[in-house]
Amino acid sequence: MKFDVLTLFPEMFTPLKQSVIGKAIEKNLIEIEIINIRDFSKNKHKKVDDTPYGGGPGMVMMPDIVYDAYKSVKKENSKVIYMSPQGKTLNQQKVQELSKEKHLIILCGHYEGIDQRVLDKIVDEEISIGDYVLTGGEIPAMVLIDSVSRYIEGVLKKDSIQEESFSNGLLEYPQYTRPEIFEGERVPEILLSGHHENIDKWRKEQSLKITKQKRPDLIKKKKENT
Ligand code: 4GN
Image (cartoon, rainbow, N blue to C red):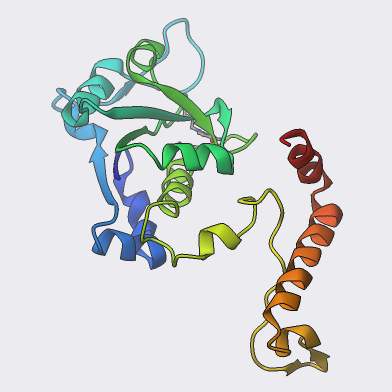
């Protein structure tokens, strides 16, 4: 999987060099290229935005510069995603769908946004990470890259994806590690029993109980899908 990110703030993406995603890049399981939209400014002052037609506050990113940045990375099989609070809200199902793509181009807006004409021309899908407004699309882009990369073969250990929250529509069971007694609290006895069938059963019960408590809406959704 290749991610090309179009942004005015390339330095914001350094966190992706860490941890699981950083390892996935080193192993060539995913490739992430950060393209500075400012490099496509024709202006000697490297100007990338201008005041909005019709008036109003702030600046709007100019369409021709964004378009040139897009043309520098687009391929036959690219899907262009614009991170925006107006998009469809990201969920685990959408993440899984996107992980099947070969090439994602992620466009990050800043300031008041991007001229609508270039958005209409190049964007395949508008995606939001939730109902709140941020100063730019960069953090949402990182959320998308992280969540999608976890579904690429080899990025996580084999079982982790199947076991976790949401993949079965339920929340995860609680985890415990050493020490056996922490501040007087013991690890649930069953986890020390070595009886794998009973442990599986206990974990399923815990998953269901926790989901009922914390996210009853997920139980309803699960029923609707069966
Ligand atoms: C995406 C982008 C929130 C989201 C954003 C989100 C930048 N805020 N909920 N801000 O996924 C104007 C230009 C606002 C782009 C946009």
